[in-house]
Length: 157
Ligand SMILES: [Zn+2]
Ligand SMILES: [Zn+2]
Image 1 (tube, helix red, strand yellow):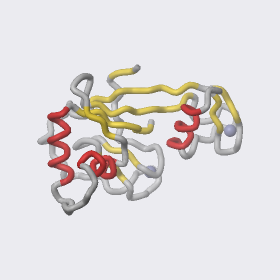
Image 2 (cartoon, rainbow, N blue to C red; image 1 turned 60 degrees about the horizontal axis):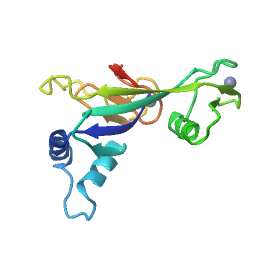
Image 3 (spheres, rainbow, N blue to C red; image 1 turned 90 degrees about the horizontal axis):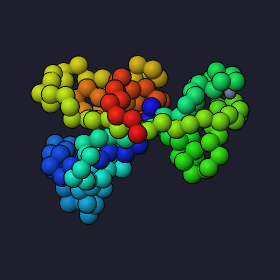
Image 4 (cartoon, rainbow, N blue to C red; image 1 turned 45 degrees about the horizontal axis):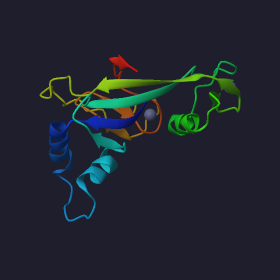
């Protein structure tokens, strides 16, 4: 699964902005939301209803049913899948097969924020990359591959 967007309520937005951005230098001309998007590497929007969610997408089937290779560059594949109207997925070896895109809304602030965060994951267990992106105290994903911390899909659209 690949996180693609964050939707926050105004209250949560203020909180996240103050928590996440207080260590960054000020004086930039960017708006807070642009800086937050840069920080999270995801588009952020603020709404007062149906909020505090992260939108996660995945392509199914994955891996490729022909060669059984897992899909790579999922972000790009999902973007292409959304822009084209063919329902075709292209695997790393070039097979094209028909599939679907599933969209999940995950509630990101359900856990107790005071949970111990001492055992921070800094290295991806799958690709050993160090680009771990935190969404919550214990919810994280890798920017280099499609590993995540077992983020539980609570709602399906
Ligand atoms: Zn294939
Ligand atoms: Zn990884």
